[in-house]
Image (cartoon, rainbow, N blue to C red; front, top):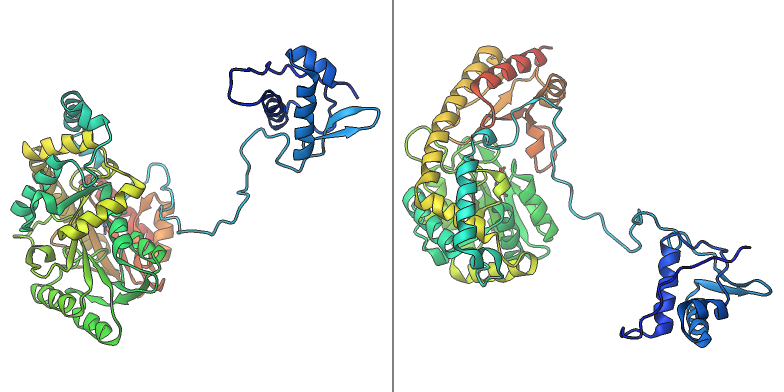
Amino acid sequence: MPRSTLHLPPPDPALPVALFAQIANAITDHIRGGRLASGDVLPGSRVLARELGVDRDTVIAAYDDLEAQGFLITVARTGTIVADLPRGVGVQRGLARQVGFALDPGPPSLHPAPEPAGAIVLAAGVPDLRLVPSELIARAYRRAMRRHAAAALGYSRATTGHPRLRSALAHLLRDARGVAASADDVMITRGSQMALDLTVRAIVRPGDVVCVEALGYRPSWAVLERAGARLVGVPLDAGGLDVAALARICARTPVRLLYVTPHHQYPTTAVLSAGRRARLLALAHQHRFAVLEDDYDHEFHYDGRPVLPLASADPHGVVVYIGTLSKILAPGLRLGFVVAPRPLIDRLARERYLVDRQGDHALELAIAELIEDDELGRHTRKMRRIYHARRDALAAALRAQLGDRLTFQVPTGGIALWVETTPGLDPDRWYRRALEHGVVFQPGSAFSLTGKRVAAARFGYGACTEAEIKIAVRRLAQCARP
Ligand SMILES: Cc1ncc(COP(=O)(O)O)c(C=O)c1O
């Protein structure tokens, strides 16, 4: 067996690591990097000592140490050789493929299936990214970086978000949504998903009963399930959440929290009626449960004034109100917010520090400027007109081409339309056929808490032009033929 030439770096007496340990580390690096393999013979201690300019005892100490660790063995008449190493210890040209410790499966992946290239996507509730004022955002971001470099680049104490954006959002919420919040009641998060997660961390304990809408938003369920909540579905109808059914659940069992989308119920788009809102708030106060109100697309309403959030009429502090800029601006900015009584905001800030410490203050400053200058308002008004026209185009096309296969109410707001399918049309099959024809939508069962089939489908129209909507519906009609 030939002796290996090692080309080790000479140990450095100035380093705070013993010389023998430096030599031993260099040899294990060779083994891990694949330059020394099992069976390779190492130089004799005298030779290596001369090469490295150290005492022979130092090399012997290094070899002894590696023998003790199982990397080397001494073989009579051969000398010191690299031991037979377990797989994964020796040659390692990439990262290990398996973890070497226990790992449970964790939460489900919430990413939707990838869309076929070139498909028309009537899915999710994403805005039209082609119309996002990205130049305005970029310029405001540059200004924030230049003028407020310390706030933008340093560690900050503002775990609840930059005060300027908190204040700008508080104004916006007061003016547009009737929520009497001041800056201190608002916390900025990275998207409403973080708001949801932090709130659930703060409130929900394993085994708690949490009520959710029977058809609803999967990412919220996943957060609640990870916290150990026992989810109970509350039925829905055309007036949104069935509050009488919720009252019956509360009479049976203590409820810790209700997650609800009263403005445009997700996914059915139903608006929770005024009477039910009042009853819901009274019920929460009576049974002392938290109402996590997710108001994800408040600004897009087309017929008259919007119904105000639960948070605008909550004297008892039961509502935790969360919102997002994902629909009025862009989801990739990851900007959301929570409005809640201050003890909860303080608590959320402490929870946030553990995972994220602070947000992107340059972005927060940039968006604050766009709100203060009414640029966000202008963009929202423009998009509301566009989405209104798209909603009408979708409704007209569906009526014309699929009127006998579907029933639906034209939604008063939002950027999605919910349809119920007639018995001859299986939405899951329809979805698969449409996918093959380059149209993506969501079958009703995608929103079902129990996983049961739902004879319905949801079409998000925000991201498609009227022309794209017409093409999509034509294809959908072809795919719906028996
Ligand atoms: C019900 C609901 N809540 C919240 C959001 C927005 O989430 P985020 O603010 O994390 O982008 C969405 C987006 O699709 C949604 O449908």
